[in-house]
Image (cartoon, rainbow, N blue to C red; front, side, top):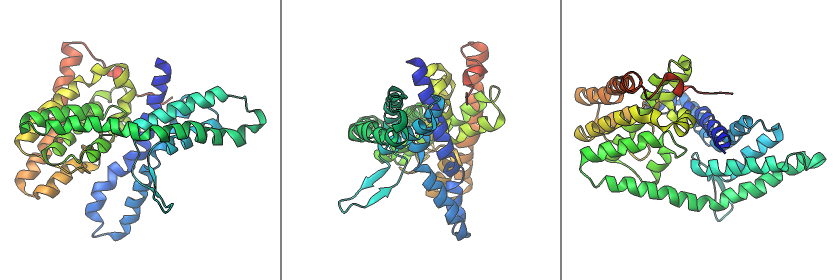
Length: 342
């Protein structure tokens, strides 16, 4: 069971990186440039389209981890897409594909589909090519689709808890929300999905961004010695790369959670704000700081606050807490952050 969970999380982590990083890297920056260079709109559109392929890519990446055959792997990807919630069908039969789907349900559907194709194995014999994709879509895929509303409702419970925190005074609220989102970004739960579902805005959205930033920057620094430079930098775009390691050893996130608490509290003090559609991105593509500057205006004070809370302090605080947990307490080591691509 542990090995199954391990491979599933690894596949999910890689799929999320492949599909979400392109838009995270260029999305918010392109929005600033497009008014002066309209031809770049195509680049932005392409990155958004790729995001909607997340369920398929997660299914394929998970299939690779389980060393499934090409037909089995593609069948899992298709089933994950069906159960993801990416598509909607209107009363007139129009299909719409948008968003990234419900990440938790993608994971559940992918797991069911993998078990299903493994059960079928070679039982279909010469009918494998014809029957396996159809059976995987019609059974695991539809199971995933049928439980989608319930999984969405479960996600709403998390959102309601976060919204409750917004009723507290800003400093405490900021610290708690930042800590929550610093953990959510390391889990299968979509920080972007939670933020948009509950329409998290204002200081709550700003704190969420700071929490995600704390995990992204912290995991980047922590994993540098165990991985190459490119892999380390990728953590800033999506800390979910460490999802597998986090579930195997949750204490690797302690330095980032403490960093998030301080950043979130300071975000409440300095009233760092955001929108439901910016919350959950953190420093990826500079979405968090750019949205804050867009909302409050580009002036010397806001630029200093943005640079300090989103860049300088996450680096300094994470370095301090990582040294504390690695050198002083001996709780962690660089190998705990090793990303396995095999």
